[in-house]
Image (cartoon, rainbow, N blue to C red; front, side, top):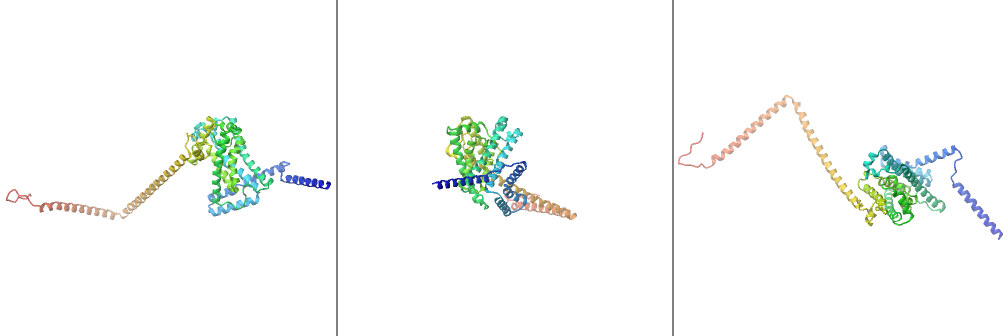
Amino acid sequence: MTSMLSAWQQAARDKLLWSYGYFQGRSIVLPRNFTELYALVISKLTSFAALPLPLLSFLALPIFGGTSTSFSLLVFYLSWSSLVFSHDPLSLEIYGTLAVRIIFFLLPALGFLAADIATPSLSKSAKAYGEKNLPLTVANGRLMKITGVAIFNVLLQVALQAVLEVLCTEFLHLRSILKVTVAVPLPWNLAKDILKGLALRGVLHYYIHRFLLHKYNIPLKTQHQRWQHSIQLPFSLVAAYDHPACFILSSFVPDFLPAYLFRYHVITWHLFVALTSLEKVFIYSGYAVLPSSIVLAGMARRTDAHFATASRKGQGFNFGHWGILDFVLGTSCQDTASVMDDLQDEAQKHRIEERATKAARGALDGVTEGRGSSGSEQEEEDEAPAGGDNYNDNEETAADDKDAQVKNESRASADARDEPAEQAPVKRRSGRRAPRKA
């Protein structure tokens, strides 16, 4: 019995020593002096800056290098392979996600905010609701709070993703949530995964936003009303300004759950995050002039209407971004156009553009033909004077011939008129022939 207890004690002590050594090896070693701190910062910045190089090389080579698509794909594949071999999968996923969220959400949103503050008169003319959409209607202290909370929530998303990955791989010893492999996804598979993710994201966002943040009287609804819907009309940073719990439910969960269920490749995930980030920047911006003048502008109008109705009535309408579920389930705001109206306007717009294109092409063809005929006439006029005196003699001869031809034609017509008169029977009044007029 004593030997059994001692064996258990020895096993427990070995387990504790192994766990201590494991966590000590996996923990972050803090720098002890300025030199180590400087080296750590430079290495992290270099590693972070190298992550977007494959995508940048893929986009820049066809534009600036004058190379073919095959060569660009080859360079992209080589750059991606070097990154996979030189970085661990967790760094590629987390640092890449952070870079994408900064480039495609924080920087454009802060740029729009700076433009609205620096040039309010110009921004007011481009806003859908004019001066009401400007951030200047918010107090300066509160505007700084909105900016700080938005940046914190974006970083919180990245930190939560890192925690989930470490939990799955290090503690639960499962495979990673996202695939990080040398093989890149094919274009068809990439497009299919993104479309499936966008569809699932729209459904999740609609039901979470409608029921958990607006319908049920729970603390989440109260915090959502106090934070995000304390602003009557949004601007781009308001997309990330909310209570952290509400933001994680309404933004992070609809974005990350499709990636987990379909097990995205990390390249697919980064492209998906870039698209959803740009969507939030534009539809919360309040601008009436957007890259898509119909669909994206309709999404922005429905977002503005959602904020206006939520601030007035408390419950709100237009819970989805795309507006499809709002149209089907009858939660669209009656004052704004539905998604079907936007689609009809888009189709009508394309038909008008097609007709205008055809008309422009016809006009260009007519101008080209006119230039060709005028050019040929000009060439004939330029060649004519080259003959000198012969040209004048030929011109006078042609004029004489033309006059003679006109005289002959007039004589022939006069004879034709006189000939029927001579052949017609002559009426007599007496037995004598009427004398012919001289």
